[in-house]
Image (cartoon, rainbow, N blue to C red; front, side, top):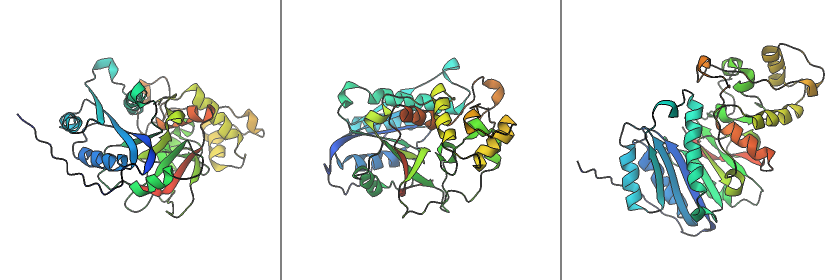
Length: 316
């Protein structure tokens, strides 16, 4: 059967407006309903740069996702994709590890020699059919501020920040890999409603459906769906920067460690399983959001200028 894929990408943009090259990356599974939209957004954004490449990965899709990717790559040679069918032990029971594997496959493509002089890398989820914040992305890249990663303000239709699982910041420095299921049960429903006029917000980690990186900041490192030793070291730095009166730290000591501390330097970093996404009997190592260990590695190696730009709205 012959499959005809029609892409209607309307680009009203000035090619070469930014004199650097960008890698536009994404992963997805069974995203036939949104993939064409994502591709059009990536092509429109890429046309603002001196050059671009679109690097995509999917595995085990049961819909037309692989066919759409094949047709797109035949139409536009800047689109490169990897499609796999994984079996047996290749498929982790941990959702976070499956996603980390996919993102690392894209990073492997990005490390190819032909992309050595590409300055920026954008990582995006492919299951959105809402408009991309292209103008805000360009403003972010053109900013005079020094940065290694700037994440989107991913919001729900009512304006609430959505991607709490990847977010570690001043008001929420500790994740479920430390607080366990308490982290999920205490999520305030109205928390993290970011005003779009706010300045960039420094964070320890964030994603929000889309994030921009300097290639030198991300390509030496990797995603992980389980906790890592570098994440432990990163949390040690984070904890030492908190006050003993910090509510998240008090909850961690009370609920996870079941002990009261008078010296913050004596508080150990002990990871815990949490059952919101996974089923702990399957795992010997606690799982975590795949973005958090990546950002931990970046920060520990001198690439810790991480922000959320509230104006870079990505709507869930």
